[in-house]
Amino acid sequence: MRIVNNSFGQNAARLALLLVVLASASIAISGKVDAQTPIDASGISVEANQQIFTVMCALDAAGFDADQSTIAEMPARIALRESLLKMQGPSVDAIRQFYRDNAFNDPAETLSRYITLALNVGSPPDFAFLSEREQLPPDVLSIEGFQKLLAPFYAEAGLDTRWGEIEQEYDPGVGRYRMATRHIVLAVNAYLREVEKPSTGRTFSVYYEPLVGSRTNFRNSGDHYAIVVGTNPDSHTDAIQHAFLHFMLDPLVLHYRPAIYTKRDVLPIAAAAPRLPVEYHDDFISFMDECVVKAVELRLRHLPPAQLEAALQDADESGYILVRPLVVQLQNFEKDEPAMTYYFPTLITSIDVDAEKARAQKIKFAAAGSGPEPLHGESASATPTSDLDTMIDEGNRDIARRDPAAAASVFEKALAKYPNDARAMYGLAISSVLSGNADRAHDIFEKIVSNANSTAVDPSVLSWSYVYLGRMHDLEDERDLAVKEYRAALSVAGAPENAR
Image (tube, rainbow, N blue to C red; front, top):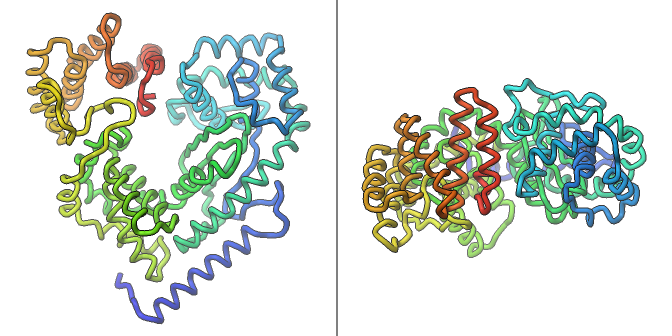
């Protein structure tokens, strides 16, 4: 589609933008702002949630170290928490036993899993799962037995009555988040020139639960997006905006998957960046999705040129190498008239893969914040400090290029010279995975975790070895053994967040 850049087109663009703002304002800013005022009629809501409340009460009773400082203005909630800690009875005993048997070292990981479960169960008193077991997230499956304990605990603790007494204490916090979310919805919709239609059935929910403290938990299941927040909305504005941008842009990314997939040749280069989360290493659609969201975020910040360049450099060094060309094209989008729905194909087709590959080859990727990342270890551009480092670096580059035979040859040479080096063993195991030799990979991962009992092993290498062993057991329908490996990964001190 040809874009017209004349004064009429610019005026039309301004008019379209004005209409979007007015349409959004007529929906989102309606009357008095309080905890009962909806965000709009398009499936966007901010509220407290009884399922999350119940799960947090169960964690209270089990002794989870929730952030009680965030409920200083909620005397009824404080009183309930104290009574739950003292509660006795068969259901709470079962809750406490389950919590002890499924303990995680990291409080953030503990909370994340239970919040994910809360988002996947229905309303009280039954708390039935909303999806078939095969469709539940792995986080939920690792603690699925907890769901069966919620209904008896809810009844024994009298939480139906207690919720009625406490719900109004959530209203001030809900109201503050509602105002913050309105501003985000207005700003994003105005920039994209989009208004989410009420007939789509898609939902975006912000759930306020003060006991989660400063943490946020963002999940989506199909067309339903949810982010759980606590404490001050000012500290979570960026997280809510990021989640809402995914809500608005994910459907476009999925719709234009064939066009996006033609750009996939840049991914092996990006995957060599130690900071790039491992989930993007083999999933180009998700990688592009995140780059699009990050690019729009940068344009919404209205940064001066020097700060924008610094942000783009950080994106490059972190592996999000498509953010820069997307930002350039978004600057053109801002001068034209169509809504993002119609402009999105131009946004994607504008990416010159050969040019970006050439540019990316010159990027010096930043080192990971907490040791080597899985698959690629240290940055490919880092200066080696020993003969072993040189070989590890070469093998990791071969893995990034998806050349498992070359990588295996390098790691075998490293092990011949440095027997039982965990990094070389891990590289050889990954090479075996990529070449389809699962039995060899399994044996090597087993040797890595066995050696950890007598020698120091990098937390990233050790935790990811457990994760891969768990995946292999899952593929063999050995769920109990898989869960055992996943729990072992979570128990590794210093394990990277991606592995967790």
